[in-house]
Length: 249
Image (cartoon, rainbow, N blue to C red; front, side, top):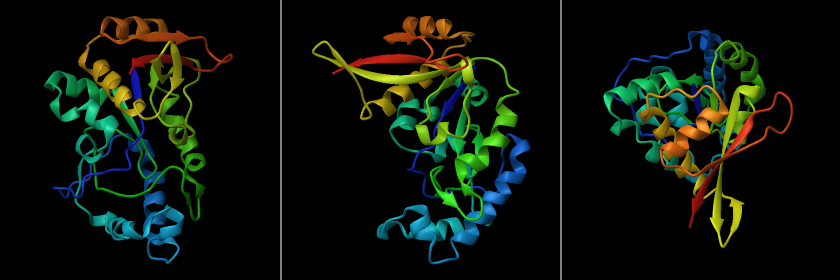
């Protein structure tokens, strides 16, 4: 089973080690291309507009310029924000941490794919950026990421945002997690609680040694772990199924 997560915009301020360690070695070449392009961009006056930075975020350009020699920290400590706070990688048991490192794959505009134990420096780059000279990053990454993940087997639990989902789709072995709020007998798709709920669900899936093989297995497992879920039919042939997680106000 793979659990696909987006990165977070919020990141730890600085690293502690000079060592950069990355899994998915097949992505070494595109990583270097994106890194070089990002550093080159940040030497130009256009960097702030291309990266979508406000006046108060100008320091992010200096951070990007220092990337080739910047200190690193584990991905498990790098990303902050609601999803990662509720996932709580730092508070997992040793066994659950090992499972998290096998199961969780974080999509990154700069690094492509990351595991929780990978060590990278803090950076600023979104998958929605059109980075000169390669253009849209989702399209740039899609061939390389597809070559890696198409070769994997097993269920794919997809908790990414649409921006990062554009870089790879798991097809019929995927299950997209959607969060619905139930109030007064009505259900609505929510964004406010969605990140927190996805973090809680991801934590449940790394705390258990069980390995669901089908979407039905996943729904049964999460129900047994105390979540209220419903499995929808796929939108079409070769498309992922949707797993609705129901939360109440």
